[in-house]
Length: 320
Figure 1: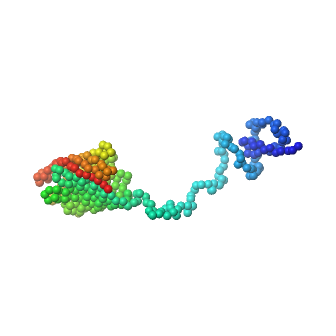
Figure 2: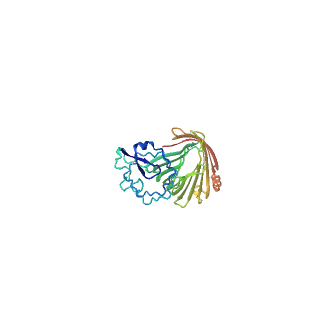
């Protein structure tokens, strides 16, 4: 009679039991139930399973949810070959190119570090009552972190001597926070023919109010403070209502230039603007109002000058 070896794997056991059975009797053996077998006292430490091939074993139906591995000690396991940890020194080149050339366009740059320029004309309009042209323009060159700004604002008379009064500045501009930017530089005022040092802060106040505050220290010790606020009330994608207000104050009297100590003047204007061509060009019509403040009111009356004035305005604002 021939003898065959039949290997029966027992699920949940760490070894395979080899039974030597006659072929005829093996077929007649009933299905054995091992669920009640207690193998907790069995010692498997001396069993050598290094030559066993588990590749054909299907464990997809095994339920590991009840296995308790809290008592296992993993401190001696070597995982140095697993992915993770510090990369080797030559894993990647500092510029992330990995030796690949940049081609005809050169090395790419981050958007915030690119040198750019821009020109913004916030006001180029005509005041019908005063018969004058008002202007306010800014040009800049630099990056998102550091810029040089050239700014000018003022008015030009269109009758009589056609006098031009302007306040121009050349300043260094830098962000101070998310909503505020600072600037410092030099300025020149044609109205009193004096130069000055300028320092200011420009940004967005709560409720999206565009705010600017600039201080000018003139060579004669006079200190000028300009405050301004502007809000854009958007009616739709093109029509915008823009109310704005500006205040001017001085630190001391200057009778030669009709300047009094304290707040001298307040200017307000409301514009109805229509933005066209990707909002880069916006013609407008509006109403402006100017009034003297404090001691400046009495001084203007002494010179037979108007204390309050209002006017229709029309103009355009653009940027590129």
